[in-house]
Picture (tube, helix red, strand yellow):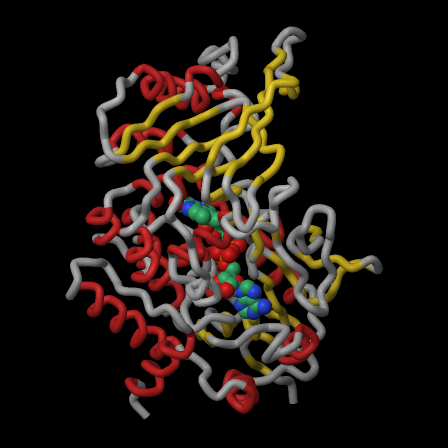
Length: 470
Ligand SMILES: Cc1cc2nc3c(=O)[nH]c(=O)nc-3n(C[C@H](O)[C@H](O)[C@H](O)COP(=O)(O)OP(=O)(O)OC[C@H]3O[C@@H](n4cnc5c(N)ncnc54)[C@H](O)[C@@H]3O)c2cc1C
């Protein structure tokens, strides 16, 4: 007798790419599994398990996006509506590599889509990068956003200057969080302990260093334009650091021209005398971090842009200077790390793929796919993951219809949950997450915040165990 059953897919990671992938998988479902192939007959016969190592979903939407970006955080409502579609199930507090192996997932499901993101920050490659007081933006952002792996880290904000190395949107996020008034941060979902440390911060100046010129900076105009309206913060462009071409740059590009116009307005603004300030300094590269016990200063090399031959080359000059700073944060990108059992390209720090299919040295790894930052590298906004996830879902369907999925021993929804529960008794279901979510929201409302984040996994599991209806 031929077996007719749903196509069973695991999506590992509940960040934007994982949630979009799950949504596309059930949305595009238009067939049924029969005789070892996906056949078009009955709609909606796909079951997707989203497996997430934390008890909370949404990846960097929760742990990366800046707490004062309220509109962006609303994407969680869309993700919520996707994750509650029929056929999708959330299995939180389950880590692939710890609670379940990639080999087991391949056996239990017809297909597995890896959407594990980029879990590490790129380190500044200069002497002194091991001194306390130096942070990657990955760790610092995770700290202020209440990611449970980072909440116990201690942050020293007793110096009056911080330096951020990098010229992307994350550098500006961090600069805002370090300078915004305590009452502004208090109305966000910033982690409560970060809020407390920042409330007593001695930092008065945050210098944002860019290696290249204003025309080459990679922050978007929207993020830059926000700096014009920050309450209680002066924003200055260091006039000595903008090079001869100043705001001329590569105006051919509309987005670039708008960004340069914003920078020019900031450049021309007079100082208002606010208690804190952000200084944008260009053509400056870190040479070393200095200090006896912890970071006390950063040595900076001055660069020059050569626009003589039609191109734009940034070269180092022999000029250097030193800036006192008690906190240095590098915002120069994230990095994915290998998932045990899967191939990994160490050079570009991604899972190697071809049309979303994971590739080993021998060829396609049957039934294994990747999407999001772990596939493309750590660039792009939330929306960029939608198409990427759709491509992964389409690859799953194409392979299912071609009979290319190895699926003799797949397990039902219930059988998977039973095995996982034996290994991880506090498996977090969707209704458990709902409990956590509403607990955080109601605690937050009481303090005029969108939510009050729980800071460690134990507390989350405690709430789940106490509140769950048996
Ligand atoms: C600081 C920062 C601010 C940003 N701000 C914005 C913004 O304002 N607007 C915008 O549009 N975009 C923003 N982005 C970009 C956006 O966050 C990314 O495009 C997006 O999060 C990438 O999605 P992803 O699913 O690939 O990875 P992630 O969001 O990192 O999700 C990966 C998920 O996989 C889980 N996971 C990892 N390993 C395992 C495992 N072994 N087992 C189970 N689960 C695992 C993780 O816990 C995580 O939940 C920002 C990015 C950063 C870093």
